[in-house]
Image (cartoon, rainbow, N blue to C red; front, side, top):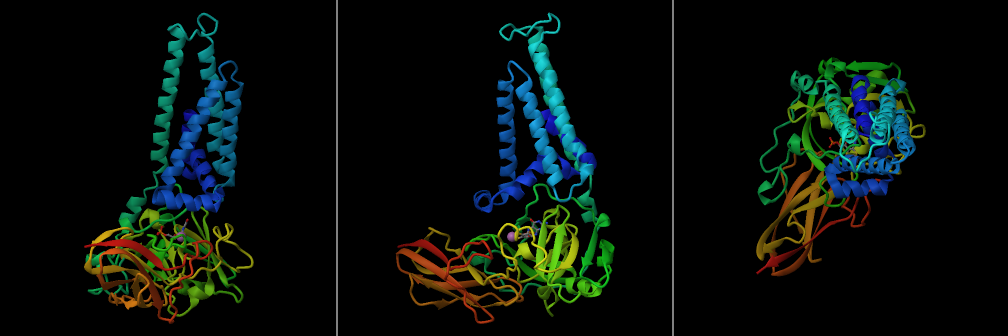
Length: 497
Ligand SMILES: Nc1nc2c(c(=O)[nH]1)N[C@H]1C(S)=C(S)[C@@H](COP(=O)(O)O)O[C@H]1N2
Ligand SMILES: [Mo]
């Protein structure tokens, strides 16, 4: 099994790293996973969900191989059938990947052939003592046993080396060199974050999330590796003229910088999947206007280099002041690879799954009637504006705090509408208006703090936000699926005398 997987990985490195049967099977597993299981994985493993999947696959493959070996003590047939069967699964997975064509097939076919041939070879070595022409007697140490053990160890070592070489060769596209060569100087810089925009001393996150801490959510088992100089974006479909844009084309346009909070629809009430950055990019509505959007096109369907798809309402992009960007950078540097280098979309006010395509390579103007994007096919909503929401960061659930004067703090967001008010109440008492951090713009989160006077004992704290349209955050609890969680974040904690 090791030889099969490693040889396929190595050949894939030469054709397309995503053609590695191990990765292709993993990526197909992600796409086929029923959403309750996917939700469970995100909740349980958080951003380590991909490591968990790879470890699980390695375990299943090792266990299957061990069972096949035991079943093959007499005849090589069971192991041969298994090696061919798993090889066929690899071929099927590669053919099912949306971005891989027939040119990728040599990788899983190599795995299949190497798996079968190596298994039969080792099986013969283990069962026939070639010098004496009779079966190896495993109870007696001797040449036959030694030859088998040495050969199989050598095969395992060669497989390990092959996998490492494949990993190195597959990663030869030097994304970091491409990133380092780029300088992004916005023509219109974002205003500096004013003093008093966050309350980090009271427990809120810093206003700008450092790139390394920015939440990450995507279906990519291995991050697509594209160089800026190779990148192209095709804008087509219901347009007057098709466009093909290069990275340099984008750099020659006005670059704007804008502070925007991005958040994920799978965030539970009180969850961590929201972050804020200074995004640098070009106006997406200008690009679409240049292509000429035909009447009736209500959806911009975008696709990433690894075949993920997203559908965004055209009206949200074209509305004056939409601030929709083809983003090239965040927080002063080119996008990190895991956040979509070279180019991603950012549309303030919409959850990421309907707006924030990373590793963007294709944009087609179409209609909602004609095309369902990746998550829509999996029962999530076609349209998903961000719901007005607030989160309590201090106190933490079940925290023990001193009784008396206590400062509770957190964040609220209602991107594109703006946060107007946050209120907090303790033990179902009167709502108390919180002090808001200095507003940065309507597309970002807003921090809040409130001074409480707490008697000793157990308490329940609730928070609710109201946006600039006057709509208060609903107390009605909803699950993230299909269009975002709702309800008040409620914290139970204790004040110690
Ligand atoms: N190519 C691609 N882009 C994607 C996704 C994805 O799975 N693949 N996930 C989307 C979702 S669900 C969210 S919430 C945002 C998250 O962006 P981030 O990882 O930079 O925070 O990216 C969006 N863009
Ligand atoms: Mo998301």
